[in-house]
Length: 205
Image (cartoon, rainbow, N blue to C red; front, side):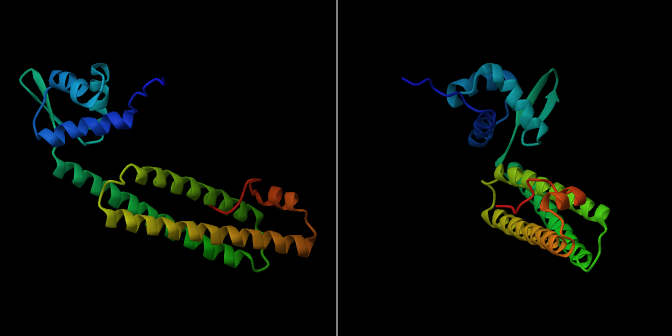
């Protein structure tokens, strides 16, 4: 018989929010330490940590009244917070797409007989940075899949545009490498080293 898997931290956060949304009530920490294990399977020892993480992310509100701290969260507030986060991520994706388009224009100009190796190396590093930023944004988006489907779809479309732009940019790099190899007889590894191109440089899947 296999051992029952414990809840992940994200699952605990989600179940804690269910307590607030289902009851629409205000609680003290001691109340949640009793309710969470019984109704949601969250161990009482982890309730405080989970609750604090939700407060830090502005998903749960808290206030001190007298000598006691009270906690609450309502669905309308949570939806508003998530929508704000989605709007921020969408803006970042749009900005990233614009930056990739600008880089694409720069590399097109650089192809016309120019051999500014320092500039090309800088552009290659910036492209790698943009790819890492895209992956981080993609991870962030996965946390908000339960939000408005239209907003999420818009962000996914923006993400696709950014990916296509990055692959076009990558294609131009390969074109330049091929041109340099034919014109100057450089070996591929020599070109990579000269222009600061990483060994694992390739298209985004």
